[in-house]
Amino acid sequence: MIGDTLLVEFKAEAVLADGTEIEAEQCEVLICEDYKVKSLRLYFDRLQYAPMIVRSCIERGVIKRLDKMTFEGLRE
Image (cartoon, rainbow, N blue to C red; front, side, top):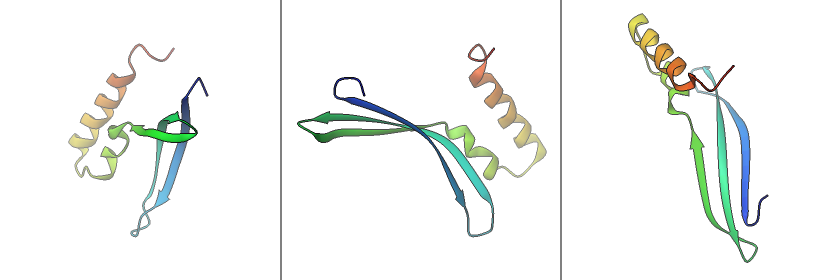
């Protein structure tokens, strides 16, 4: 916690009704004032959910390429 701001990173895991397992890395930022939460923001990468809705190999290839592009320059 820095001042009145708290950052929480976590991984959410779930199993859908059809048995599909999903997981997503997420981040919450809480702003507090007078020991109460004034603001809560949730951040996640929407591309993590894309593979669950695409059907064709072409769509999967596009999603995979977009996912790679989002991390270019961020990883060693």
